[in-house]
Each structure stands twice: as structure tokens, then as C-alpha cells.
Length: 384
Image (cartoon, rainbow, N blue to C red):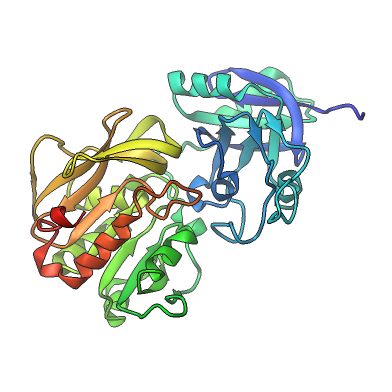
């Protein structure tokens, strides 16, 4: 057996975890976050929302099903680094095209194995998400590694969506046998491939547009509704997109936002956003729908949240609205809706790749909103 190469996971607070090189050898930097999902690692790696982040997988055994092209959420891996405890030495699945490690090497992603990922998760849970670096086969001292990590740019104030948005528009049509009922303009802040596919399955022709698209260009498509996607970065930095959403609300075009899009809707309505201590990431996050009392298990990936009042209806220049969903883990606002205009959002992922599927009804609600935009959402409770 060949000798393993020493590697180090170095956090900005000076905490260092020692392990072994895995995937590409070298240095990489980002924000340390953890994902609690036991599966879905390929969807995590290719989710543009993880741009500039180093992901710690809490589940100890990762990679056993390998990777394939079909499950990718974008055309590349976006994470800055990948941290696992026990990577599977084989890929055992009939759909697998290559091993996870081979895919990471081909994508120039630096990783580390052999560290206690649950201990790292507890540390980040207690101390908060922070800057991090992975160093393998390095001659740097421990002190020098910490200094390099502390020198990287923070996530606060980061405008990252320009790195991940589509360079040119494209269309996702309904599959064969499904009639086209609606035309949707989807502003791409880091959209996952599963999202337009989920809308198309309900008869929506989805026009995916770069984030630089102007309102006049959107209106020229004559869309029945506008969708704002997930994406990386700080919503407070997205001043241009916030202004676009304000114009959409003023025009009363049916609007649906998820994740980053939810945060930007919140800012367009006049609320502040704030950075969560360690964020919500994984496919097992419990959320309660305040309008029905139902609890959903949902897929999350966000480090910021909206500071909206949860107790009563709120008033904005666009009319009254309310908080619709709240996290059962920490009471973070997870959903907003306007009452007199057709607009709503959720903090999580109804496209649910790699699951669960409790929130898939939200795309149906978007379809209902486009069918009867004059009603807003106030009459939709009985349809859930």
C-alpha cells in the first residue's frame, strides 16, 4: 500500500484538523459549511449555490454510487473543496460512469479525507461558518496556513452570481405529451437543472435568462410569470436584481422566488437580510407551513435569511403580506407571500434533487398563480 499524503483542514479561528490528501493535491480556500444529507453528494457538488464554499459532508461514507452525467445540476462542479471522512474505494451502481474521486480530480477540486467530519460539523455549529483552507503536500507551517486562510475574502458582501449565471438565454420546453400552458421567464442567479425541468413537467415553457436581463427584455417575451432562482453570495450585494424585482412587483406580474430569490424578494419588500451562524444545508430540514399547519421535510442550501415579522401580516408599498413558512430547527423565516399582488417565495428547494419531495406542490401553486394572478394567494389555502 502506498503511503498517504498528509493534508490539513485549517479554519480561520486557528482550529486545524489533520487528515490525508484526496482528489486533487494542493491548496484551496473558501467558506466552511456542512451538509447533513446522507445522499445527494453529486447534486451538492454541481449546485452553483456552493460557489466559493468548501463543503463538509456530515455523513461519514461518501461516494459509494459514483457519479453520472444525468444527475448533474450544472455543467461543472462549483465547490471550492470537498471534505469527507471515509470515501468509498469503489463505485457500485449501474448508473455510475466514474468514481467520485476521479470526477473531482478531473475537475481540479482539492479534497481531504480521514478527518472527523462530525467533529468539524459540531465546531462549525458552535463557532459558525468561517473561512477555511485545505492544504495537502505543503511545506507551510501551521501558523502560515492560518494566515493564508484569514487573508481570503469573506462571504459577507460577495457578489458571486455573475460567475454562475448563464451567458446566453436558453429554453426548457415541456416533455413530449405535456401541453404548454404557461411561459415563464426564469432569471438565473445559479439555477439548478432540476428546477426548469420540474416547471416544464407542469406545462411551463421556461426561458432561462442571464441575471443582466432588463425588465423590458423580460416583458418582450410576454411571460405569464417570472421566476428568480437560487444562487451564491450575499443578497445585500444584489442591488440591481432587487430593483428588478421591485419593478416586477409594481407591474404585478406573477412572481415566484426560491432560496436566493426568496432573500432578494425580502429585500425588495423592504426587509433586511442577515447571515446565519452556520446556515441550513442538507435534504432533511423540517419546515412548517403556517397557513396549513403541515410539516415538510425539505432540501436547503442557504447561509442568509430574511428578517421579516412572523407574528402578523406586514405592510409594504406593494400591499400587505405574510410569512408562510418557518424552520422548525431555529425559527428562521422560510417563506413569504403577498396578499394583494401575485408574488411568493420560499427559502428552500421544491425541485428536490436528490429529494425529498414534500415541497413539489409549490410549482403547482406557481401555476395556479399564473392562472389567476388577480386573486393573489389569499384563496390558495384550500388548494394545498
